[in-house]
Length: 203
Image (cartoon, rainbow, N blue to C red):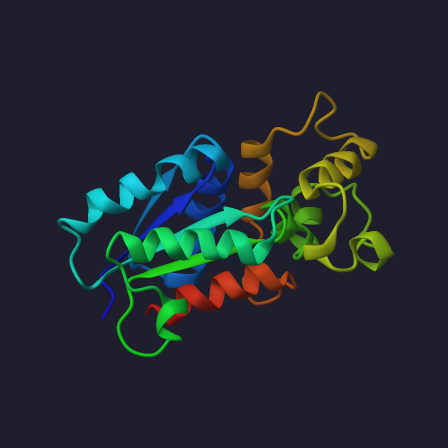
């Protein structure tokens, strides 16, 4: 039985979102969320971190690495994380086909954390009531994981048009405000569903 899950995320806003979202997924299971300063910082330092953990981490603890796709090729980015995880002595869920023992799960957000917010637009409207309920019906936003031009930029434009975050999107504040209202079972973002189901599988 998994006793603890450690999450590596690329920025503070992802950490603040997960602090709110994870209890809705794992209940009282112990978690630890470690944020880097940005995606490049995570990619530069994740190998060193994994090596450090490898010397002492118990077998019944799990690690989840969560990173934004941004403009990267999703498969190449996933392979990059898989190669680092395996080279540092870990079995990954992907490398085992989800069968048998593994300790690391690598998950990609398509394309950024804010895609998860577009995936639960009711949560966005609960946090920011003046935004339109019709946004998810518009072609540009129908698939949260395929929004072009950056999901945080898209969310910023919508919020600004409705009188919020006029000086620019405050990502940590926004992540907290929306995550409080998120329902893990109604989110239509495929990358969120994949993340949620992967975490559930650890339990």
